[in-house]
Length: 105
Image 1 (cartoon, rainbow, N blue to C red):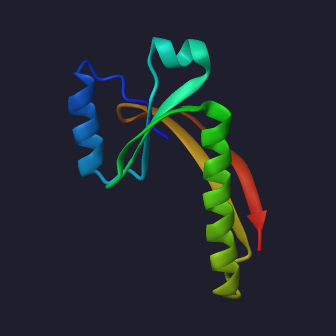
Image 2 (cartoon, helix red, strand yellow):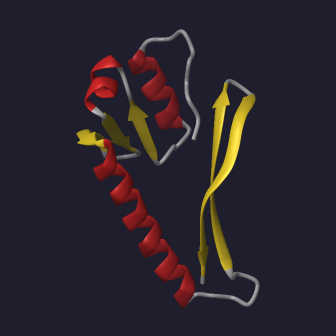
């Protein structure tokens, strides 16, 4: 996860991240922050609208579950744990890094 604090217009940032092929972008302004929602954009699909934060997280867990099931079918002896790590950056500076989930196959 990367937070983009650049002093640029939102549309410029969205285009920039789209060219980097980021799978999901969350746009969070004052309105979203006060209502515990996120504005979701998906690579190649565009704007998915405003969603409750918990609904978006549930969708991400569903996607991870599907991928884990797919990987377990393709499981190799060297693949026994999938680690989901969140890194928070401002520019090139990593502010935080934490393992938020480990999935044993």
